Length: 148
Image (cartoon, rainbow, N blue to C red; front, top):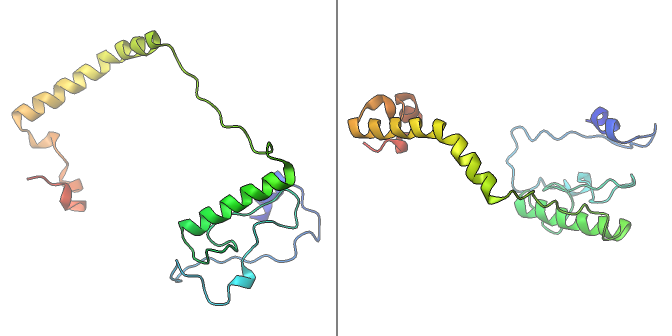
């Protein structure tokens, strides 16, 4: 993981004090382990412009859950805004809009591909052929999908 981080930001020798990997294998999640608070990272770090967010970060929500992750993400955004200004965050991009005539042209261009598929579906419904319905493998894996 440190190798990957070094690809994006320089870390000087001695800049890392401690590295721990918690795999959580065989550990029931959702409630944090007793005594884990001291090992959990803060949202801000000693490295400039590096902030952490996630359910394992120290927040007021002391649970390994979506709410804990969200609480740390909101706090990280506030810290970035406080340290680098409110415009440090990228502006949301607005998707390109296309004229209506272009959408109609695209629909017309797809019609030769959609029409045969639609006809095959209608004919298979009419004939009631089993090979056009859910496969038997899918039914075995998901019996609730079988409508028969």
